[in-house]
Image (tube, rainbow, N blue to C red; front, side):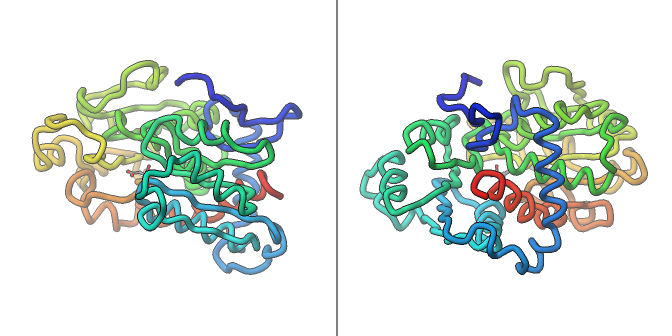
Length: 318
Ligand code: NCD
């Protein structure tokens, strides 16, 4: 990835923006995870922390669809007592041709302190941050294929809750459309920084990324082989909206080769945890019985999303 047009840390090392997990030290990731863990009870009850960000304003600026990320940021900001401005791109002047930069500056002029932004283009959130006032914070809620740092953090929190804080003995497998996945990129950054023992990746060659994204990973073509004794399996959605035609022959053949079903899960360690960032394509990358089964942490991930986003908002604005 190109260098960021703004630094996400200030001169004293504090986080100003959260644009990517790449380059953040393990100590910073761990203290964000610790802060999130402590907030889990309040993230669920919605009470107890409503004075933390009173008087601050958070705007969710989503140029792409979202259920989990936008909803959990909205709740996270509300549960910390911030005012939340939800910007719906489909009912806005974006439809009249206003640029993302002008939209952001317009909302900034209303007193927004922090933008949570999702955009289809790689690097778009960092570009907006570079065009904002110096005191305005930005959180990347997913830019193109590039990064989704809060998803990376909530995945690490879930892994830590299921497997304990020492990642050095863990074997983690990432399966599916790594090529188009900002989630996979952020997970890879975090897993490496937190010292995971072994990272395996399994995908058809057409869905592997170019460049150095998989440095240090074992790429294994056969899913049966890749699953052998892994402690965690991170499934990815087949991102058909970002895909050129013909990258996979058919959804049926994709499931036959790369879908996770109960037989295959039996090849992993007996207590292996199954994760998926959602939204799932049931029957394409994961079967119902695995998605809804006892080893699935998929809804735990969703719940952790609120606590992680509270911890990030607190770190940037508190
Ligand atoms: C992901 C996203 O939009 O990057 N979803 C999410 O935020 N949980 C993954 C996806 O769309 O497949």
